[in-house]
Image (cartoon, rainbow, N blue to C red; front, side, top):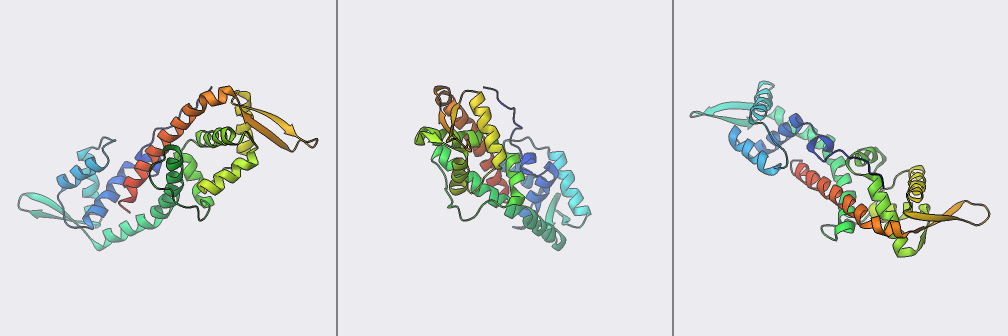
Length: 246
């Protein structure tokens, strides 16, 4: 079964550059009070310990924020200390406005998948569909193929026969997210081609194709579920970390 190589989960794939992460972290932390560069850096490395952080680059970002008037740089004895300014508070509010809603909406969908795949964490009720403007971003973070294959094979094992319109309903009702119908049917054809599903047309009009899982599909189900779980848990971890600063 052919697998597509996926980009590793990182701060960059969440939508923040290293500069933006440093900036957001510095502004948020200084909203709570004056602090020293080394203390700020130490907290950053503890919060985001899955990535290497350059102290020299961190200090460069802090210095540029001070030069642009977002921070106030002062001396306390022989040590530098930073304080956020009104301009810095406005920049932090801009980050909240432009990132928080999108990350929160996406995280609710991620939380539902994590709960379904691992039976751990929160399972937020679906009150509305993931907004259209956030779907492309969600697809950038996860493996859409793994998620749809997981839901499809699970439904086929539980229900016997399925059709892809029913998978769309499951995705919407259980997770609050759905891909395009065209993608679902293309993926179903690929799954048949790869021996995970076998199908037959229902009725003479051939408008609905009933699908059932094969032994090959049952064999690969756990692998697909594990792959999907690993990805959404990693994304969830990063989203939680970033949302703490928003």
